[in-house]
Length: 347
Image 1 (cartoon, rainbow, N blue to C red):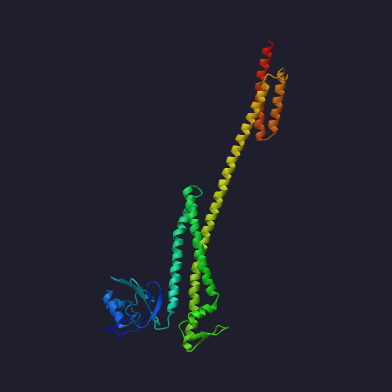
Image 2 (cartoon, rainbow, N blue to C red):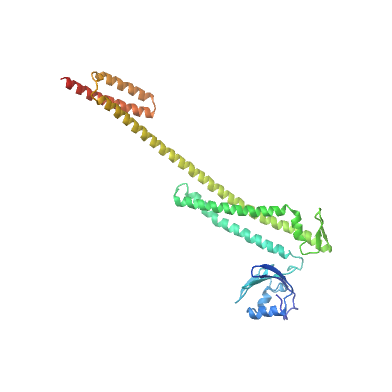
């Protein structure tokens, strides 16, 4: 924004973009006196406040600054200078840098600011998420509680979202870098230059503009490659953390499967033991009934059968050994009891 009669320099000519109400960016011509008076008087801005963000006075206001006033905030960030008000923003634009040579186009500076903001947001989220995931991966092998598993699930979901956003931004930058035509269209924007159809060669009315456009093409490629590397770094780190979380989930699943197998084995042993006890009780009940089998007359037959069962138990497996031991004990005890009862009945 210009000052009508500065004490130390001639009246500068300032170009800016006016952002009104969040609708659109409207190019504005040189600011008129009414707008200057409106900015200074109605918004509570003083002339020295305007001088702090005027790009034409770069010799005296080259240091970054942020001034807060009653109805406006004045930003001086080097190449980006603006006055933020309640319903509109004045963004200053100029066609030269502080060294007197050609500077990057204003549209490229805006694109760089947007890429920087987006990339920094991804990096901050990744920096906040990485220590939390590492702590969960260290705790999970020893503590597999429901709360920790829920935190791991939420962190994994956040990593998937972060990786997808970084991957989408990376793919966008790759598409632009792989299309030289789009980069050259950016370079000729705002200049008296055109692109030949088919060859994409630049034709400029002034040779100097063609040289500047070619230099800007290299700078734009380097700029995009820089942010591409940062996006690849974020995407790769997010993928590595996600892989670590998946490996931990697989390890937890294996441990749970092993525990389930142990429980199933114990349950099977209990079922086999119950079956053996039931069969032994069945056999004992059969021999304990008042049925004439003539086996109770000879005690040696019970001992012989018990020895056979013992031999089968020694040559069989665990379950067979258990059943045979129960059978032999039942047979011996029941045989002795039946023999005694039979002899007493005869007497």
